[in-house]
Image (cartoon, rainbow, N blue to C red; front, side, top):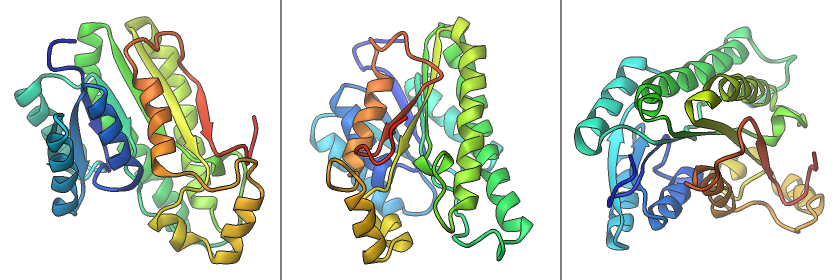
Length: 251
């Protein structure tokens, strides 16, 4: 419930990139932030320290979001400290193969699809009881423009995120009567280590040239869209997808 300490937001994969940027934005807006991470304790603690130095409240919790028991333990730890999770931002990036379908094995495609949905299923199941009990909640999933606009080599990511987006719409329909909104933020290419891994410089320049706003997204651009969906007064948007791509694709 809202109190002097603000809503509790759980952000998966929040030690770097979009997750860390979102943690900082939501902390500035008065939320108590749970910084979930998989392996990089130092980076997660640095995000927490930065938030606390700016006067916010944050805690770092390690958990592999693909494992239901780890997720349940994480949410229980949050509950013991701050109470139930009010806002879920599911951002954790599950590893995937970058290759053509011709060269891909079923384990690479099916494994990514299974892990993507297993993680979304586990974190959503874990936070729903508290949201349902109070009749209020915000769930935001991070998608990708690749789920609608294919790009060479990205079939595993694009297919799995397309499944996640449809999952979100079904949840939005089911959970709306409980006061819980469910939305997707769908970034285009983001200036980050991940983009550097996937793009060579020629490809990157081509992507920039195709973007009316003249650059790739920054993590903070995506975080602002997440914050919009997470806001207390954003009460009548659910089942939607926000494209944060600088106009690269318009739909």
